[in-house]
Image 1 (cartoon, rainbow, N blue to C red):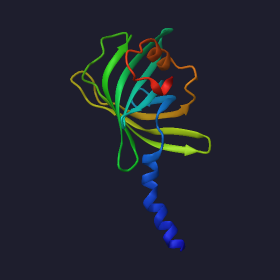
Image 2 (cartoon, helix red, strand yellow):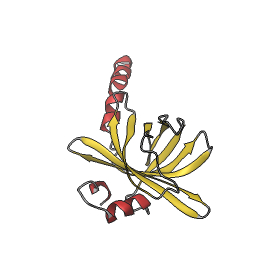
Image 3 (tube, rainbow, N blue to C red):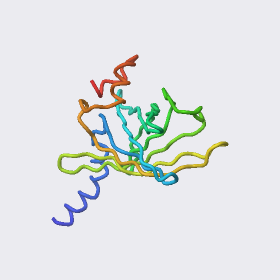
Length: 169
């Protein structure tokens, strides 16, 4: 009986990963290995008609001015339970220079559920482009109440041009 229980747990664990609710607002940080800098990072994940999409918000401060970038992101849950996110398009930014359109970020995150807290932790990598080398780093974000103060949620509510934002209403 003990072996049967262990076998059932081993078989069902990947299934539980698929059943986890990853929709909502996630806030935390992104650490860049190259620059050794940490930036604020937020994601809103939405699920409609069985497909996930998301929006991300990164921000940083230079000389007392806050810069930000908002991107639409494609999201999928891999067979091994990893949450895979890839940039789809840059929606808005106020960067000090012209952003390179050929740089794409890929996040591969693990969903961790502790008692009353859910977290997405893992690695990110960007592709190498003509002007920029590839970057790597770590992402650590926690699921928060949608009513938590969020620059991304404020932006999405102000620019609500579609049904994309039901996860944060």
